[in-house]
Image (cartoon, rainbow, N blue to C red):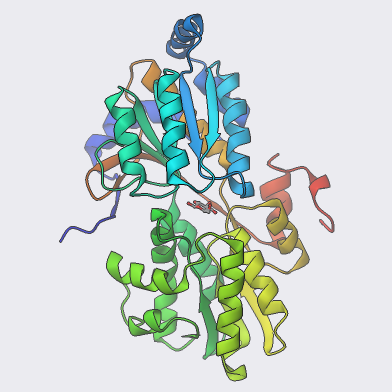
Length: 393
Ligand code: BGC
């Protein structure tokens, strides 16, 4: 049976040739200013003028929630880049509700958007929502999270999510010595396809080190049941996620970590290695482990480079975060909108299967941040101001 989600790296000569020219013009930019420059094409300018005349909105952006700093970062980048590029635009939040997400998209449809950029609350529930947009003649770009089970997705702009998970796994592996180290596994929401990719990436790095005895899984019987298997099926990953999910929720993460440590014998704590799926959940879980007298030390992963977590990293309370530069992702999405509104085919460099179709995708790399490179990765790059933090350098 065809795997539901299989990442197909675009290595074929044909596609390379097809997109080769365009990709240098419109892809990886690390500064909002560069993206704006890339976006200011004659085609976009023409489209902008046409839409401004009738007061409609050209590009609608729908993000999952205001309650996580990650998505506020994206909102800020979108508003700046879209406005600089001369697009009429609106960014809306779904607040963790697929119903609100649907209403937001309906609102944007009535406002005449030509391009919808959507980061879904729930991968499969969003299928019907984007089908309505597609029926209205709108081009649909999935942003960061892939919508599954529909052919109404035109493009996908994403970080390399398998690598995000792999970097987390690698951090834990690189910092483990000896055998019998306690491994605690946590995952994102089962409704988010990324949770599967992150876990898959981490598992494929961790599994050989579980098999050779470096790590012992302490909190998931479902993971233990498949610990000799390197390549898990989607169903196997779903079963594990069912046990270790945080739902991307800090309080769920906290309760789950508390329950795990309560259930564990003192000997199953000691030096702990913790796979935490993102920064918010990492801080919650880290606080629980830090408070347990039977935990001698802990290392914990994260992602998003949220300000609070970067401070945790500086303070030694979170070990690493995977920095996903939202400037690049937003500018990639805007560059796609420029191409689409200009009647061109956007440049892509990968394809993700969403269970129904292979979605042409633009993929962006990520950067591991530890105490050692906060300054160069996040301050010198202009992402954050040093005044946001204490104890830097
Ligand atoms: C994103 C992460 C984010 C998580 C929770 C994922 O889909 O890729 O960056 O932390 O959702 O919102």
